[in-house]
Length: 440
Ligand code: B12
Image (cartoon, rainbow, N blue to C red; front, side, top):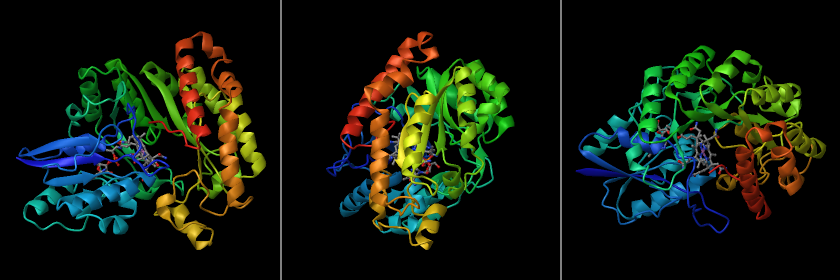
């Protein structure tokens, strides 16, 4: 039996050690899917490095390593180490895809984008000793079909109380900073509904009552979402996902979402400055409407979680300060922020580079917690300081109480808001150590 070892690396911490956690709440789908795509005469093992050590002495024939954002440095280090040990190494995932030329230096082959259309060919090439350096066949506009993910390889590990499910990949929006737009170029590729239902059923049969719908934007195709919600409702599960904020004006869909068991949605609001949003090719989002849209989503019983960036072209120290009021006034339980960062490969990176505004060319240090580009209305040092000030201002005890306990919904579900308070206290602890809070 041949064997593949699939590794989801953990990013390095400030001391250059892979981050370790007792529990990984958000597990990715890539490794269970790649394992499911192995031919019958292959055995597969999955290592989630955040929870377990890498078995350097493995008897595996092939090593597959994923990559995300700045975590890619660890992916490349692991690849190098296994290469030294004479193993055949394949790199894949978002970051290796976006910087395939660079990643290829550290491994035998890189899979750019979706693995589904090239995986069989790659394994055949490996077996005849004829691996190509890069495999790329993106799904683009077609339909997405995936086998049942091999969750049996991960459910015994220390993971959360939900598993991932995917209905579609990509997003119709083309925000210039976004890695998803960079790979999928404005396309949303859907799975047949029967497959999504099959996958949710598997999660349920494995004893989980919740799932995370991994789509980048479940509001990409209204009709598809409407049909999907009818199916999900019948499965009696709770779920969370990510979405375009404009869903906030769709009362019918919001009602269907809530009835189908959707408990929380995360929104990339990015900024309260129109000018900043325009600079990100996100003029379709209107921050003046954010409060009304958020309130409407919350009124349907769906929690709103937000992701925002600071350092856009319209941002001033004052507007970053006002972001604190925005988050508090809109009762956002668990807000998250990054410094706007030009990820290599994205349109935003090309623009910033062409304008001579890149101030740090060590792309491996781009982790969204330090300014690496010249903002228009402040210095990079001021931006980094304003970023941490914003986090500190929102994670005082007073602000945590204001956002989570002093709200009308509190009495209906106090347990939930106490849980959010605990998450906030953990974020506060991280912020004090200048660690950007993360959802994992
Ligand atoms: C779940 C998730 C997480 C989870 C779980 C990660 C894990 N340990 O498994 C958590 C919360 C921990 C996480 C953390 C981070 N994440 Co994350 N995450 C996701 C999310 C929402 C879903 C991932 C997923 O399962 N997708 C579904 C699968 C099927 O798709 P896929 O991962 O792309 O895999 C396919 C191909 O890429 C390929 N593939 C993937 N890996 C490999 C490996 C090999 C060997 C091969 C051959 C192919 C291959 O095959 C798959 C099938 O086609 C994505 C968004 C997204 N659209 O994917 C962001 C995303 C991947 N994350 C991202 C980032 C930036 C991070 C962090 C750096 C955030 C941070 N600031 O700390 C960290 C890094 C963690 C790390 N381990 O290095 C970015 C990556 C951008 C980029 N340019 O790389 C994304 C795209 C979000 C975004 N919109 O920007 N993440």
